[in-house]
Amino acid sequence: MTEISGRPVKHSLTLRGHRTSVSLEDAFWAAFRDIAEKEGLGLNELATQIDESRGDIGLASAIRVFVLKRYQASLA
Image (cartoon, rainbow, N blue to C red):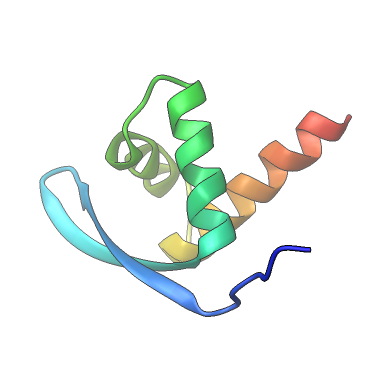
């Protein structure tokens, strides 16, 4: 079994011209990149879409929930 790192890794994203840092675990970064690629989007574009619809939760949490929902939808 592959070792899974539970430590968040910080990456910079640019949302509507503003830089921000987001900390996600490696597994979430990998899934987020995969989703963006499958949708033909860059990470910044997909993060901007998530940011615009996230309400009052943090961006990192919104990305995790987005990734989880996509995973759950793929199982249905």
